Image (cartoon, helix red, strand yellow):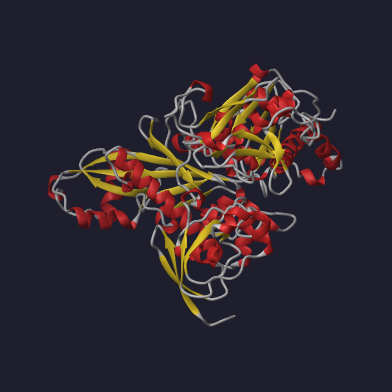
Length: 623
């Protein structure tokens, strides 16, 4: 490797980094903390990490770039950051449409907990007159809690004594915040203050955070952001690979970026209600197994090798300060248990939220995301599986796909006779035909609209049951692109906000079919294991489900046929499960029970997997 060191400057942020020759611009961007979207993790497969060279000399255009970037764009200087290496000091411009945005749709859930029974309790201590204004020793704190509240010799976290020295209060009362009636995690002067908790759902693509009142159970504030680990790969396999390629440093980098973003979100949410992160006294965290391991600082490498065994499966309580979180340093973070290699704590949380284990009739619960997870069962037994749906259903892996943010097309209708297209976009009410020239213009297509498009294509005869565009249709919207691949124009360039047509290509339809096939195969195999051929209750979990059109999903065969009225949209059920575990201690015990009760089914090991998957690729499904 060359010993030459180059300075690489990224525009418009102005961030600079000095790096050794031989590394790609994408790798340099990662080191500099400049995030360029790359669903394939910088492997030259997706063509999304497009940048322009403003100054300096770089390596010649590669064959991979030529295949992924249209000739006109290459002529304007567009390159792929993951294939290009600097050969001098270089300035790289990142066009806005390729920068990884942190704006994502808020992941919501409905229904608060009925019983508020948090892990942290507040106890007011009345000090003897002689002790007012003095620092309390550990022994005195323990004695007061025993004498005034009947708590037997709790441990005192060291930060409580440090806070006393800093506050120098003259008051004759203190408030001790006690975790599980076993440990004092915070000591304040005066009577009871606000008690906040946080529930966090770490998704592969999106992280949702809910700030909650531990007294009332109210969700005081909530928000979400793009998981910054997307810069290291769009799916869990890419992130495992990044950890393997970069032993030690890989997981620390991914974990550091995640924790930094969580801390920033907590700062923002608490500021919105006039507080600060130090007032957060308890936290629960869920995520798929890879996200779970990375959050805890455990390398996920073993999850990439058969038999895909997690290093940690049970629930954990870890001090916030050990994790690097900026909440009250003496507080604990409760991480829910995982079920299996690719069925994680988020799936446990979904079950906790939707309660199939408390029902007589079987429920099919589908959590649609980059890593799809399915549960089927009732109070007698639960089966679960993981489906490698990939990011197509969330907009990634689609030629003009994007997340469900402002400007994304989220719904599509096609006229059966003229093939004209109407659409609705995130951030605008109504359909395109109802809007004015000043309305927001579309910039891409998100996952729910991909499902709509395929359903509408099939219903209007644009594609056949194999997902192939039909020839001879009388419409200019169906054409060949510059690569000779069939595509259908959804929005003409003069109507878009990106000065180019928004299309669905034949390749995009294939990506959807693979994702749909994986999901439907999971449903069919679980139903086979359970011994049923039809289902009465289907629950669609995940933020994606909020946007999905039930009819389109059934038309494409995304899941088994059923009455549309029996399909429930749960929103972020994983986030709600984390919230329930935050607000009710018994839900944590229930989560441990769920993780032990659920039987994991390895889809690829099923003898009928290939046969069912091939049938599931058809639209809607080949009976």
